[in-house]
Length: 483
Image (cartoon, rainbow, N blue to C red; front, top):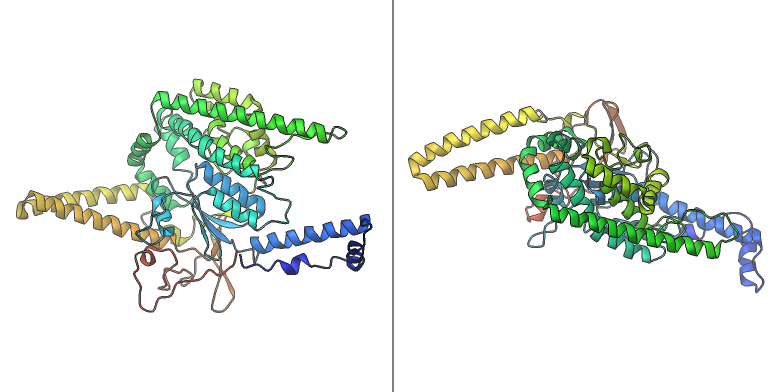
């Protein structure tokens, strides 16, 4: 992806490189010291590759990851990026409202529009959006000499696809059915909406929760028979995982009978994409909560603790946790998820002025919605009295659509304002790179010219470029960093 790997593969690690090349040309076996030198060279090359892939400067995140906080596919992608040391800015949005960000990464019409997340945009502008496997394969292609081997052996890809297409939808059905039907609405909102980071998106999610909850219940919360079928699918997947773990343990016993055996993973002695995918999707059925479970302290996906769930559901979950597959997932959370400092991801500051407009409170939004609705009703009645009922309804609907488009565009401007800033979420400060002078500014509020939307340029993938609208004098902005 534009990286020159040859200079790293040919590094001279020490003065013994000449003797190493001489011994490689001879028919005799290489000395141990030469082999260790070659191994060190490959390790240094792998480290440099990942370093160039991860960051140009330690203070600047490299990519943008659009997520839904409770989605297990998003957690799998976060896990993979953190494991490879790739820094990124996460843009978390509530379900339903995620369409506003996902559509910005769509191809030009009439091609199908992007409606799903996760979407990962690299520093070079490459967009990985079809599935979480796109991000995994991208990372795998950039770490061929690294000990992090997501698809070694290749059977890891088959298992990952199996988990993504079988376990993920069943786990999502169980999770959402439990929260939306068996738990109070306040608990569901706390973990489906209130976990969104920015005040703008969280306020929008809270204000529209009554409507989004009805849509989610109709879309995801199936009948009792279908939920039982989902539990059956989860059980079948866990049985398959236990079978794979037994096979790996038997293979380990045959090959390392004289050594102290370690607990195997699904495809061998190291973590692969299959292990990450299985563990990430299992969060939704094991309810690995950061509030109650010590082994879940490093997870970025928040779920309710067992104590807040109905007894019949919590009993099932405890049985599932006690299985060999459940213990494998818990071991992944404890040992393979990464540090508890949040990983490589960061968020835009919720304290910045640009992320705290006057309407970013649920009470203000509700008042605005009630006012607009009242005005539209009054105008609709007047129009109906003047032009007839049908024309009045049509004009009132047109007004509502116009208001919705205006709100949508306003949110797009706000959410696209932070391509180049790395905010500190713990205090009201910012760090911004000026592309013209190359200097880094510090201050308590964002600089007025640091955003693409405020300089009059059109960001690649915005709705203006998708629909072929060109503004005179505006040029697409380029990312300041490379991935």
